[in-house]
Image 1: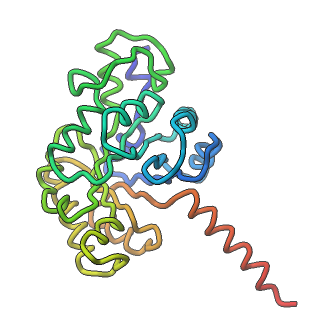
Image 2: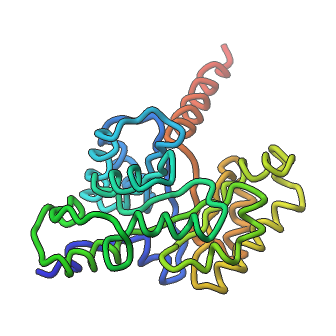
Image 3: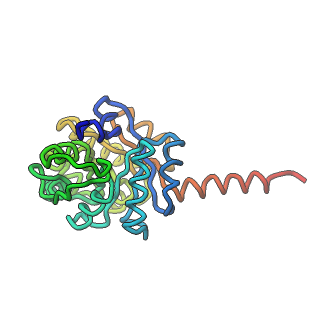
Length: 265
């Protein structure tokens, strides 16, 4: 069996077909059960947020491998866009990297180099990968399969990112540009102003450059506004970061507690 038959990235396939892929962010859960929960709930992907959580590398790897077995794509948002973080989470089982606050084409190219094996990048080939079930294949075949399946998602989180949107989206190896709306609005002095006209401008511009370069736009930071998520998906966004495990747990728990407390005696 060739390596490419073992390793498929369902999210990359969905995006290539023009479908909408939806992910859940993991910040709270340390156990592998979250992968099965995400799959059962209907998510296509989960990403472990090492930028904003104390999750360990060990827990990250275990969740990534459990997600692969469950048939859901595992990705990791790294705390810094350095080869040391990027290669480690990919070696641990991630099939995608989310690189925060990318501000230039050079930064995007550096992320791609760190995420891809030769000849596309400079990542070290460990020989045996969890994504390939630790099976051994010729080096060239391994590199092709891993590179084809590994997604690179860069985040726009500043006005500078938006100004350089065209050059960043043009970088070969970038698959998705994810708008980190909360940080971007904060950078622009518009914190929390989701209905500001600038928000539509941000998404319109990002979708435009993604279409131009054959990439996909991702919606982030709008978990509390499903109406706006729908608007930007209809505009052309094809990946949605829908919320965190903590927010989902707290939201459902709050609703249930209120139901009981509202019982009329």
